[in-house]
Image 1 (cartoon, rainbow, N blue to C red):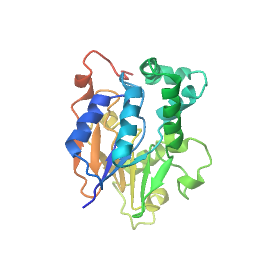
Image 2 (cartoon, rainbow, N blue to C red; image 1 turned 90 degrees about the vertical axis):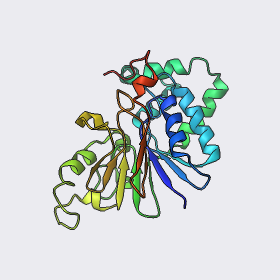
Image 3 (cartoon, rainbow, N blue to C red; image 1 turned 135 degrees about the horizontal axis):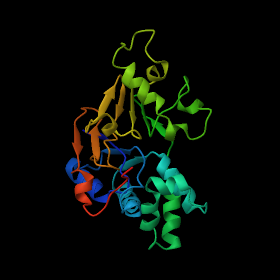
Length: 243
């Protein structure tokens, strides 16, 4: 039976990504959904993009665009590097691109351009990097970039989703739009949790890869998950996003 895996924020940790793919052992019929933030943090951001493009040739892959990916895309397309981006892991990404030719960078730019803001599957499951604020769903967002930056959906899911049943009139309307919602963006280690977290019908699979956590892949049907080694152990001479 074909499986669907959702994979959390990678943040330049190619070694963790290779570990995860080795653990889940995807088959040709499986689908891999990546929730964004492929870059910024550890030293192999450009190499992560190369590896993802290879996976895309072997499996059905869906790539959601994260806020860090949008920063990198803008820089690659000629914008000056955003100082906030540079401070938050972007310098490691810039360094990782130092040996790529312009032709190689152009291939990466095309890959970033193809990334999606969100995906809704046939089972009415939403896959999005951060969240959305509109009561009518992400397609109706008024503010560009909210799908890559919003944290209110997750905060609402943590507080309301745990206390109120879905059939209650008080259950958050945003969450009722979809059977399940899968996000990254907000590391679970912020809550001293090192595994995927669940609030109502929202699943957060960003388990802190950019900092001192692990990379996570989850089978969305069974909720079984696999994790890499702690990423700072895979890059012992680096600090990652240590802020």
